[in-house]
Every structure is written in structure tokens, then in C-alpha cells.
Length: 476
Image (tube, rainbow, N blue to C red; front, top):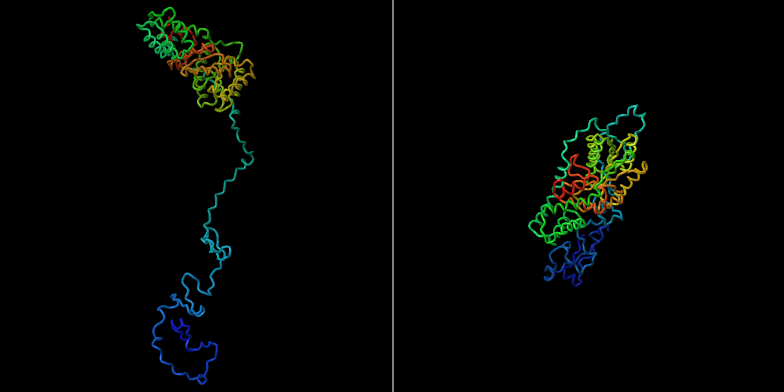
């Protein structure tokens, strides 16, 4: 069987057909040579037709054939990027996965694939068996959790040693007082000496004296009164500095004399309850220890209540004072209810027949309403046992705070009913005149003043001694 000779490029362009008949199908039986007619000799080829008319290349290389039908063109072999015709894909994807990102997902097995056999997991070591409880433990009931509320902590009473520590050798009160007020007296003396040495007394001099007294916290009212007393009958005349200091001492004594009152313990009220109040750092706990020493020296039995349940070292500090002075201390754990402790301490003092009960309290700022309300609660709870208690409410003031002491007295007096003042740390300031300003404004009794940290550095207040010490004069 002969292959059909396709016409050339120009022949196909002009519609020339193949020179041989159509190829016989492969299924037809072959004809015998007798049935094949004789063919005429082929004419000589035209030189024009023998010229190459087709461009170089093959159909598989993409040479265009504009004359033949699409079904006459042999299919080009497939490229590596497309599947061969008629070849079924190895795996058919579900319709919902068509076009999806088929990145492998950890822990998920694609459909249609047989999962690989997992590697055998290493067996985990078995935990050691817990020891069996003993038979006796099984019979006991499960313990109940202890109460953690500080208010229900057991009450503790610390007894002092049989022999308290001996008191240190006493130094004269006048010596301790003048030493404690030395800063204030030196500042005033230097200012007075500079103003009145070889100088006539005039309005400017008196104004400068008034400024010096205000800077020492005497207050405006007291400073004006002292300046007027110095200038009375001495205008345009000279005045010696010692004479000015004498006038100063006289006016200070006159202002303080009405408030210089001792603390009287009423023996008919047993125990005599003294509530100690004040701001943080005023020296309440130390003052309690010093007062205990004095009361014990007078023959009174004393009990201390550690009502400052918030400061970490307050309870231990009061215990140390109890050991030094020979007084028992009633306490609970830190953070317990102060009002409940005061109630229990009063009951314990009653049962023991104690003469004086000193109750310490937490330091609180006078401008904190919540803290002041807690102080009021302490007083209400105490009065459930004794309607007259506390019999004395002592406000401890730090002299170094200056004019802020006026605000403290005003607020504490409204909240707790202050009955008397204790002024401490007069040795740590050059403005000891605040005591004069307090006396002029409130008129509250001043029971004690402190000029040091020693147990004997707290003494009953005496107006004359204080006035002469602050003016830099001898006791006289």
C-alpha cells in the first residue's frame, strides 16, 4: 500500500489535490495483481514543482498549515507539563478539593490514600505506685483547714521578766530640757542679738522680730503679742538683747501656763484606760514605754495593749518595752482587728485588777476618713465594757511637723475627743514654738514633752521651765 503524496505548499495554496487515490482502509482484503489496471507512465516532473515549497520544520514544531483541515493535521506529541491524551490520572480528586491548596496538613490523611503504618510508639514508663496509707490513718477523719482570719487569732499575754531592767542614771531634767531645745533657743538668740545690738527700737526692728518668732512656729497671734510687749514704752530707745529674751520668756510662760496640766490617774476607775493616738511616726509606742516607766515608778500596776496591728514591728517593739518596764503585753497576730483586741485587753486588765491600761493604736493620717472611722470603732467597742472609757485620750504630736500639728489636733479632737497632748521630738527641730501656737488656738492640756529617746527624756510639762529654755535663759 502506497502512501498518499501530499501536494506542496503552493499546490495546497492553489487548491491542488493529492495525485494518488485515497488510501484503502486496512481492513479491506488485498487485491490480486490481475485486478490492478496498468498505470500510465508518469510524466516528467515540472522543474517548477521540484523546487522546495515547504518551509523547513515539522508540524510538531508549530509550522502553520492554513490550507488543510484540522482533522488532516497530525497531533503534536504532548509536552511534559500536560497529560497524555487518553491517559487516566492516577488519583481522582473530589470536587470539593478541586483547585484547593493540597499542602500536607499535620495529623490529617488525604482521601484515597492508604495511610502509612505508624511507627511503634515507645512505651511510657509506668508511674510508681503510691504507698498505701497505714490502717491507722484511714480511720482518722480528714483534718479541717485552720481558720486564717486574723480576728480569730488566739489572744496572747506576754508576761515580763521577774526583774525589769534597771533604769539608766538620771540626768537633771533642766539639763535635758535645755539640751533638747538648744536648736530653737540658739536660732532665736542669734536673731535677737543681731537685731538689738547697738540699734534703736523702731517699727522695722519690731517687724523683723515678729518674723523671727513666726519662723520659729510661735504663730501669728503670739508673735504679734510678743513684739508689742517688747516695743511698749521703749520706742526710739535702745534695748539690750538679754532684756528682749526676758520679755520673750515672760510672754511664752503666760501663754503656756493655763495648759500646763499634769495627767491625773483616777484611782476609782480601775483600770484607768488611756488611749494613745497620733499619726505615723509621731512616737506613740515609745511614749507608751516611757509612760509605763513613770507609772511603775509611782507604784501603779500597768498593762499594755498592742493595738497597732498593722505596723510590722509595733507588736515586738511594745513587747520589748513591756520587758524593760515589767508590764504584761496583750497582743494578737499582725493584721488582727484592733477594736476586738482593745476589748479583750480591757477585759484582761479587769480580771487581773490592773491599775492602768495603755492602749496603743495604729498611726493614721488625719485626712483619711476611713482610718479615722476605725479609731471611732475602737472607742465604741471599749465603751461596751465601760461607758466612761477611755478615761484619757492622749494625742502624741511630733514637734518637727510644725504647723501641720494644728490640723492634726483639730481632726483628732473631732474623731476621738482628745483630752490632752504629748509633744515629742522637741530636740529635733529649731521651731519649738509650735507648742505656744497650739496652746493659743486650742487650749488643750499639755501633759508631757519629750526631748530625746531615753526612757527619762519624757517629763511633765512645766510652762516656766519651757519658756526660759526656749528663750536661752538660765533656770532662775
